[in-house]
Amino acid sequence: MQDADSFDYVIIGAGSAGCVLANRLTESGRYRVLLLEAGREDLNPWIHIPLGYGKLFTNPKVNWLYTSEQEAATGNRRIAQPRGKVLGGTSSINGLVYVRGQREDYDHWRELGNAGWGYDDVLPYFRKSEDQQHGADEYHGVGGPLTVCDPSEPHPLCEAYIAAAEQCGYPRNPDPNGARQDGFGYVQMTLRNGWRSSTATAFLRPARRRKNLSVITRAHATRVVFSGNSAAGVEYLHRGQQRSVNARCEVILAGGAFNSPQLLQLSGLGPAAKLRDFGIGVIADMPDVGANLQDHFSGRLVYQSTEAFTLNDVVNNFGRGVVEALRYLFLRKGFLTMGSLYAQGFLRTDPTLPRPDIKAGLVLFSADKAGADLHRFSGFSLIVILLQPESRGTVLIQSADPLHAPAIRPNYLATPKDREVLLAGLKAVRRIMDAPAMRRYIAREHEPGTSCANDADLLDYLRRRGGISFHPVGTCRMGNDAAAVVDERLRVHGVQGLRVVDASIMPTLVSGNTNAPTIMIAEKGADMILQDAAGR
Ligand SMILES: Cc1cc2nc3c(=O)[nH]c(=O)nc-3n(C[C@H](O)[C@H](O)[C@H](O)COP(=O)(O)OP(=O)(O)OC[C@H]3O[C@@H](n4cnc5c(N)ncnc54)[C@H](O)[C@@H]3O)c2cc1C
Image 1 (cartoon, protein in one colour):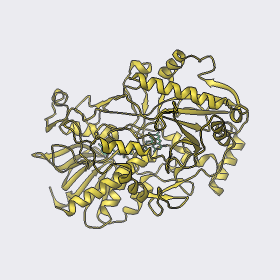
Image 2 (tube, rainbow, N blue to C red):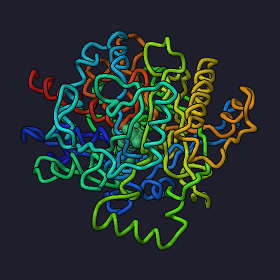
Image 3 (cartoon, protein in one colour):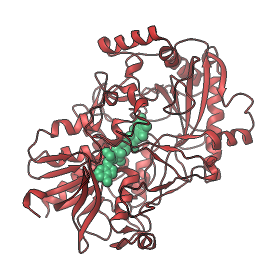
Image 4 (cartoon, rainbow, N blue to C red):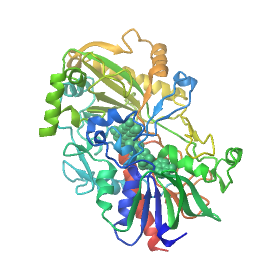
């Protein structure tokens, strides 16, 4: 292999984590870095217009379009598992909502044996990445690459929602990423001047001017190559051609919660018997590679509104659509600047709980399912999300062919507690919908409908129609026990020169969204990689 094919660091995947790593590892100019991305350049305009995320949900040019295996607990449905396949990865197709999770989530990571991952340890990395519209304070940073801001304007339905929650005894909280998460308010989004702030635009674009960074798109990594038990390089397919590259210091996997465990398994790190079944030579028998999959399962309440002020009304009326497009073009305001949620609340289904266990997000439109056409009537939806699921699933290869999707078995709703908490959350949100401030805007409950009233019916509804927040994590779990996949410096146990730095390393799912935490993980991961390089 020629020197031109050697880099200090080879990063696999230009997603939420990979773009941050590419930026931070090339900042000093000291290291040559190669970023391999299976997807293309982020040229599709719908990536950059926030509301465009709905158009990316089923687009194979920017999305891996995974689906989960059929499972009885969710009505034998194949649930869509979209993942970004483009520069910026899933941060280029996500719903833009910026929520970090709770202090307790990170303190729990530390209690599990991960030194340096408590809330006070990770807060500086959230602040470092951030350019917060409201300015800097104890919890927020300014001047970082990632712009975080409020919706472009208030909306009467959100005002009613927050007021109705207050009428039910829940506090108003303008900043769930601040001192406390409890309460209701508008969401903040990763948005800059009305455009999406993906990690490709925020972190990668400025770094691409550097001579020590090479980026290859449409480069699908097929295997990490080992010399003994040291990662020495990567094989990849580039536009149909098999190619390889050397990594002088490290190979860093940032392929996300489905693809990172898949690539480890294809490279010989995983459950040995499973790998042998597919004729893959075993480098390390690691049963937990691909185990511990967690996601935020949710229930949805859909309402017909008494007022024609939802996105449904705009999409179904040509004249209003034109006005909305012009407002976006000239003022950077309105529905086109909107992500998935507009307002949200964090609540405790039992007031004696130490922290919120449910998130209730308000969506200013309604459809039969994510990515489908909007209803013809004025509609809005409430997404009721189980914040701390107990259920655990798996991601396992089903072939030695790297282009064959892994089998995703999420095992949603597997524990009684998961079902009970989500059920209690649905009922709590229905009570908020029935409070005076909200009631005036509700013509009827479209789904599941008021006839779905008792626990058995609601549970059945969750099984048949429940969805997810698209927050898979945990499949390359960080820990210092024998079964963990990476240690607290994100180095893969038992081998040299290989790290995983993405959402898959979370030992437990955070009680928020997962883009901001993944960016934090990459900020901290980059620091650790550079510290280790300096000590070499
Ligand atoms: C529809 C949707 C809405 C969401 N909404 C929100 C939200 O509002 N707020 C929020 O915080 N989170 C949201 N999320 C989740 C969040 O965006 C993800 O958790 C986060 O982006 C994961 O980051 P990652 O770096 O782990 O993986 P990704 O961002 O998925 O990056 C992985 C990258 O690696 C590439 N890759 C994978 N395998 C290979 C390979 N073998 N070779 C080369 N390249 C490879 C992929 O193409 C991709 O670019 C949403 C997700 C989805 C799907």
